[in-house]
Image 1 (cartoon, helix red, strand yellow):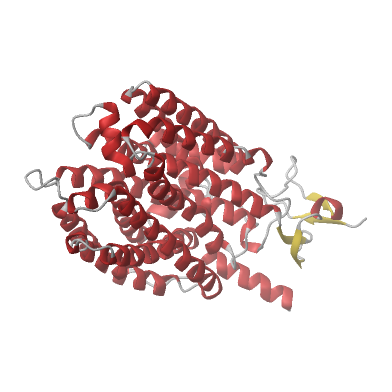
Image 2 (cartoon, one colour):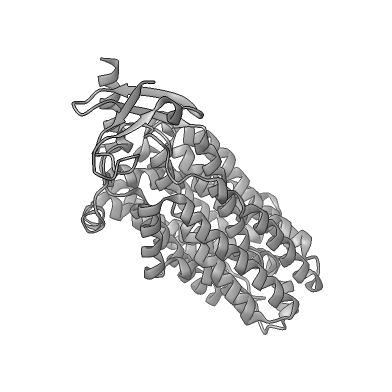
Length: 468
């Protein structure tokens, strides 16, 4: 049987303990083979492969993102019934059930733990930690909801918030390990979009489960059951593939301190960080408050839930078209400069949509906002990795998500405070605030300069050597 060796510089794919080449046999590499390339440097033969198992791991990450996001928006779509069930004076404490999810992501200690877990141990331990927190958090919420203990529900919500960074931050890390440059954007899109898809399920299904305040415990029970079932696949997920998928996945990543310098001295990354944080923050805040934005104008909770679902579904469909195209063209900057103004203008239009007292305007604007936001998300995550390579992809991913989650909490608090108390708690002032900030940030796209996509260039050079 022929043996093939991986070069010793590859510390993330099968390097041996003594630092030498780690032989990999045909039998070990077989099974899920879909694509194979060989290149012969001085120190041996490198085998590039993508494996079918990558889709199973991707599915595990998607399921965890769905149930965590569903947990985030469990009570927001039925905020009025939740207020009545727990005997609260207002809906502001219900809003804090969403706000704490955002703040937990920004905890420095948790962010460092996520980075260490992903960088040193891979995806599987991250999924294990997340699954444990999701299970405990959901069943604590159910028990405390039955007993009308709002503080206990808040504690369970915080545990679910602690689970979120372990899976949401793994998107670019996982696609870097298992996918080539012609599939990373799509892989990152699937993982990242599972999070708002879970929110859409919560927006659509929870009002159907909790048709009255007395149904709040039943709704919480079914969400806990779904989360329990979805937490099982991590047992079967591999942290790393046996061999790298492409040339850019072979090289050793920079150390943590050196990576910080590379990332935070990159002007393009800092500009994108500001835009990403603002638009993700507003998307999170609006998703949490959509019920309260629409109900004062005579809409029902079901209609608000359908609006939220349209926001997500339109985004998923559009991204399913846009992401594969960008995987082929790698036209990151062009796409960013198209989608950012569309998002800003959508927030302007959202000011007037509820005042029409029709469903057409909220539905249409939500569809446009979802399409642009979802298409932009994976592009920014992958573009940031390209610009900062060979810094670990999980570093830029965690940084971007932390910014968006923290601003989501801040925006939610501000928008809740801007409710018009004298006019049935209408949120038109909140929507004006949202639109103004979104438009102010939009011109930052013009300051982004064209620069090399580093991993893509590495793969192009390797492909030329193989063809030659």
